[in-house]
Image (tube, rainbow, N blue to C red; front, side, top):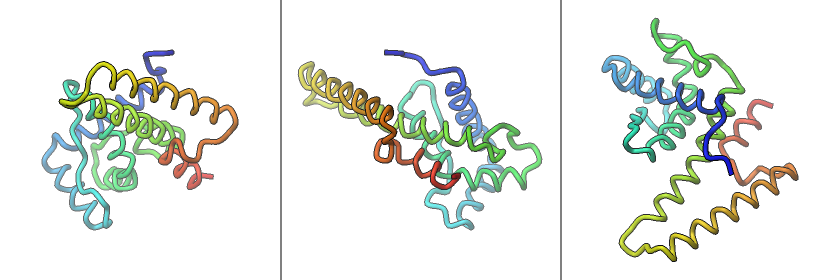
Length: 163
């Protein structure tokens, strides 16, 4: 099993974290983005910071960035020096990778939080990891058969909208 991401997926994560942190770091951009989200009736009105210390935040940053992708594109139209990366273009390939990563990290964050707590021990953690490994094997089987609709919901929604 591979322990690292491909270079193109690492680039997507790097771009996503850079964009989220850049907007959050600048007070004016953060306020403009918040007002924009409110005017567009978005579910969320701000992006999340990513901290390398708290790696669980990476999945949350990816998911929030994906959910606010339209708002980010509008922000890019109004701000002169906003990020000029693949995110801000209508790059379907980049957005598909972002959706895929958000789905994957959602599962990884779920497993990580299940492994924590005062009632967890080696036996329960081993059982949960075994179940997750079996789930990955099941996903691979379904992917090879062309069935993806329930495994990666954000990715499927994007594919349906783009096609």
